[in-house]
Image (cartoon, rainbow, N blue to C red; front, side):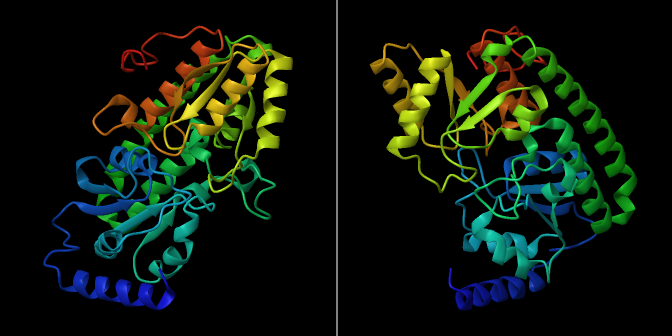
Length: 321
């Protein structure tokens, strides 16, 4: 969207919002718009029935390439609070959020993670890996940021938001403990996680896995023939058993690895589909943040020869998940 079109569109949206009956009425639930499913689910857990949360990006949507629609602009203009990840995850929307923040309460919850805990990346000078939700312990900072943003938007509800956030953080601590226990059962020589793009670096750091993304930190980058060839040679040499596709990224590069390994006589399997930049379908356990991480930890553990319950931490993973 050209800047002139952007200004015209967002201006019209704010006019519409300003005259919409009860758009920000104190007697209604706090209206929250979140970019990703992970942030939206966290907002629902912190806000409970005191908030009405809309997620812009659903299952299978790539936040690196997502651009706001006119419907999105209107929804955000009318919201009491807008939550986004930041750290250059929503790369195509950064200019939009810079303007939006002058008119609407907005919080980049991923940027609440202390700088010392962030992972830098060679792809983007002076920027950090934005996939902080891959480590549940780090994600507790985002929970706190959501709580604080909601409390500022609705101070009279702050006590309930704090209680909900405290309970949710306890749940995330249990999730992190489960992931640690399960993944530590994988033989050390097998602790290599190969996926479509570099979304799992925080996960790998937390649980002692070497992480290799075929593409870079953003899905905008492309994996060339030389990159695929080198990875195939490494896989065959190290006798790596499994690679993983991602729900929000094309599986083309992963399948090229499988075919390349087969050509060298190595049986490389696809260990399963992981949730990286988006969660599972709404209404499913995997469509929650806890279910997403439970699924990933359980799938990786099982595919690499470790021990984990078939249905995961809470016994709620879909059959065959």
